[in-house]
Image: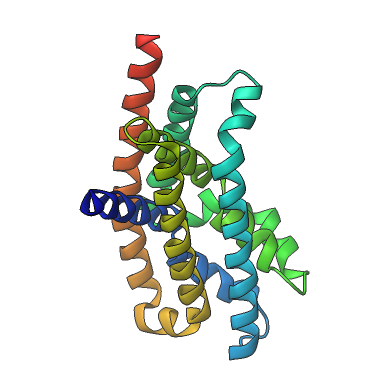
Length: 214
């Protein structure tokens, strides 16, 4: 049973990290932060990571309830989440992940801010609609086979591990950009786009089948 739980946690962690795409966010972060000293990069990385982590836990424990309050079931979330993720995946596959993360207007506004860690880096560059839908769907998928305690625990572990990965990636954004370069980041983004596309297709199929059955 423990092996099954670990397998589910690993699956969810990989999915979340792929959709968060911290490597692309690190590249954007470099262009937004004027002071790239280690202390500043660490501070921005920590604030952005905490923003993502808090928003993720709010979504995990309250997101589905909010949607149900408006009469929206999980299958509908799977469909719209699949559509959003598919659009993100297409942009990533063409090496244009920035388009799916934030607009040019948001980028220009960020240039005028002293602190970009929460907005727009934390939200919406890292934590956007695709992540919201993914968290709700992953939790729902596990809770259909196991107890809510198990599903919340597994997704929580995945969120924490993903957050640590985001922090380390942003913390060492400068080094990562120097090692990978623009070409390396584009290649990695395209590969991750394929994974996001596969997750999106799975969400869409499951959502449509669920709504059709209802």
